Image 1 (cartoon, chains in turn green, purple):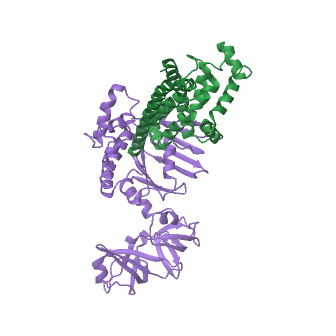
Image 2: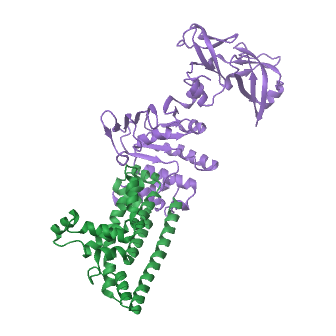
Image 3: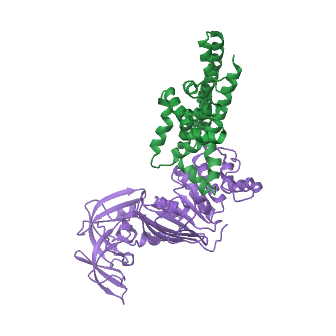
Length: 224
Length: 374
């Protein structure tokens, strides 16, 4: 069992959550409530990582992170090191790749809240932020939790994009999925098997949690 | 409570997406019903008061404060207007208890005082003991009461009720209606009630405003509007019967009479000098002012506008009989009235029989010719 790789994966997953969840809540709520030009384009862009081969996503991200790209240059100027083959680059890629897993459940959860309830909040004297925290967030919470679980589990298991963008630098970019691959390459079937079993367990637990939460969403909405 | 000296002043105009042309006022303590067929713009008008819908032009003033003024580009958001709104489906917060729902609208009071005040309000709507129930655990009538308590929690300057009785069964509706009638006495704010149920408006409202296609057609007390609708269009929307068309013949101010030419007959009506002789007008007579001539026993009022007729239909409705008469109306109008079933029997009323009725002069109401036609 490669605990360094496992720890790195968990760290990556937690950081991804920390960055992605606020973004997903903002974007998911926007897509659920507002009709604006370009909305369909944004929805398609969010869903894109679902259908593109990870190597393709990885290739474009690598190109974007490179020393020749504006993003790569700006990052290097501010932080003094390149994005490619670094933990930060990996984190950036992870946020992009997980967009559909985080945004879509959040969007569905906000879309399921009857507009009347937000209006009721407003005519009860709640300012918009208060309607958001007191009415929308509690009602959308199961959807947000689903997004968090899916993102966490998916980040642990992401392989293609991580390999393309991060390489396999132990302690920096070698995640558990990459470590499993390396063990198999080195004919260490036992090591690969233990780590695979850990990932399998985490994934099953995540799906179970997701199903429980989404059932709770359904029940809450029926209550309304 | 907000300054009760001033009520609600409302002027709304809009062309699209929902046409609006409405001006009305509602005094503190007054209950004004907005009535009309569905799609008449009643709920939209209510939403304009709450700030949930923005009209193109107009003004919303309440309790001495201006909430909306298109000319001055003033438009307060809903949470800064002191309104209490009861939604048609109540829109209670499903994740909060009854107490929580009411307390959620008490944000303007000190935190420590909210629970106590919420309890008071729930007691006011007869829900003591159910504070900890979630909306899903309450009956329709109980949910409506929570919604009323929540609407009052804000100490509103106006109470808005959007079809508040439409989602409950008949018995509950009656009870909730009488509760509202009782509750009103303790409220010194204007109350706007949206309903498509005319009986409900007549029973509860001090005045009512009839709306059709976004326009306010007439605002009057229920009895005034039912007896003297402003136009045949109003009369038809109120489902009033005995609407006919005639020409003004002449006026006799001394006798207090306006003569109408109606086909071959000349009718005496209450003096209405506003209509020039020769003008075509609509007129109506309420069924209560149609008097049957008793056979062989002349009675008072028989000299007033006797109309020979033939019974078309006679429908027993409980103790009364609804009678439809065929008369010599050029437009083919029918005259309807009702009388006790035993009186109908005694006078031998049956389909095909001839009879004579009088139309009481003082109850004949003349209206300007309706543009929409029959």
